[in-house]
Image 1 (cartoon, rainbow, N blue to C red):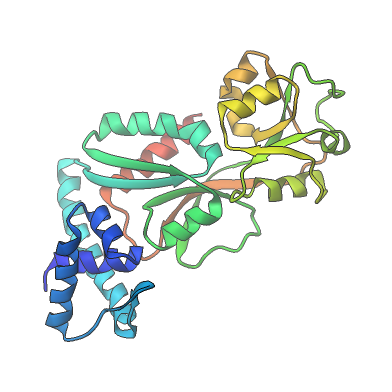
Image 2 (cartoon, rainbow, N blue to C red):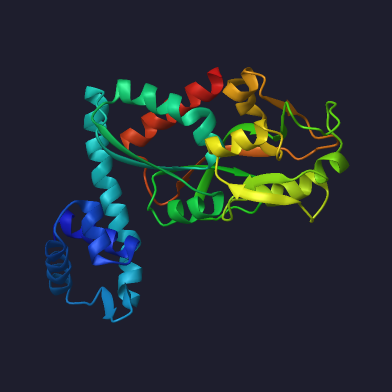
Length: 299
């Protein structure tokens, strides 16, 4: 049995596909298939059930998967100790983040991180909290940046580490005809056409709590795009952005958009990073978290 065979086994189990595992490992698919076949032969068991609909772990495969992951974690610890001695971080790092964290912090974090650790190849994906949580729990993502309410239940397969607490503010264009005062009454906000994040994100759920209504006058749904800010600045609709991102927003700085508190809003969101409990953080991931904390704490 070789370490590479265990890596291939864990990757195929993680992605549920030989081709996706091969792509992730940057090797040819036949090599992965042969490696798994050799491992099954060595152990004299079937690790995967194969069918036209795909592959899935057999009961013995399910039992061996956490043990294989533990072996790989121990091997990684050995490499980590060597890298720590030479202060080198290398390899790859997969990050998934909600739009608000991408918008407010990630560019600064990545810039600082790459200056210190140029050998690390980073992949960043923007997604919603629920999808990020699932991907981290399944070890498809090393570190996730999410938001949650204090009372939200947490997937037992992950750890949540808070970075800051925040809430949403209302973005209103300077050409808007709505009566303005700070904080803005909920009933006035509910009269306006709204821009919200696309389905798959939790923003609408948060807004319903903040505004005290299940009926939102949603004009359109967009991501954290330039188009959304232009529509808001023209007074066509109002939008919602976290309070920690306001002071860096160029539209707010230029006076094209005004940011207001929501009257009576007592919803405090927790923003932080998550990791899988069964996956040891690599040196690259540890250094990324260190830079992330420095940027957030210094902002």
